[in-house]
Length: 392
Image (cartoon, rainbow, N blue to C red):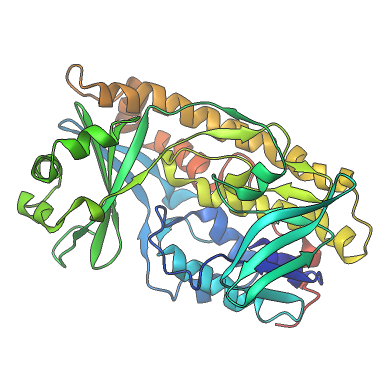
């Protein structure tokens, strides 16, 4: 997204992608109203929504025998007042196609960044391994958007604060039938949490486990795991038999952290490279998009004019740090008051008081919808980028 916005503003940009394509099993496929508002401001929303997707206007979760409406997004003042469940590879392909319309945009696939080039304390480029051999790329600014295990932030020696998480997640697929509900499923029971995301012909499932319990779950055997899953699915338990071996079950190690400084001369980290988010709320991808919009708004002009300063780059963190902190703080509260007690397996599960109030007064569910759907500081594409310097 940042590459596309910079190119639209007349900046020459190279996006380096490690893999040969985007067809990977991403963990989060929730495109929130804040992201679709950006697409709307760019004039691309209608086209984006022609991609097969499932709109989610109400978020509900089952706590024991009680179902709670967590958020009603249908009243949001947004161009698309819902969450679009759409495969992330489709979203990335869509953005790549938009980027290619601009002369200054280049996307190089099968290009793995191995290290930073640092001269006199300033990052001046990257060393890249491509399918055709080694490559050195110089740049006025290197942006690390390479996720929570960022190679570049480690190479830069940037320090982070870690806030911990009580859970990890095991991800796998279950077959989906045409007669199944289309809505996302979330279930909290004593000792277990189970999430199901609609991917069309299958369910992408998250079996949430206590932090570090992966080895124990696997040592108990596949049959025990299938039985646990079968007890949580809202349809026939036999469908869990489609998990044929533990190779089908991928571990997501949940972490919540944040860099104390998102940049050093010549380098900026955004998205999970700057702040790894909990999967709570599925906001990670959308917070990363907000970072990208803010970065483009703040840095397009100095980059285009060849006048970028360290102070310009530091303005990105100054702009985005508060909404990041506020979001992570809320995630930590939810981890400690909802997720950790559920996973402890102690006592009967019931919704916390705050969630029971949402059920008693449905209008209150618009408050979490606003936070979840739009965030604490939604970014809007600057007018000069909307107008565009490139050629559509």
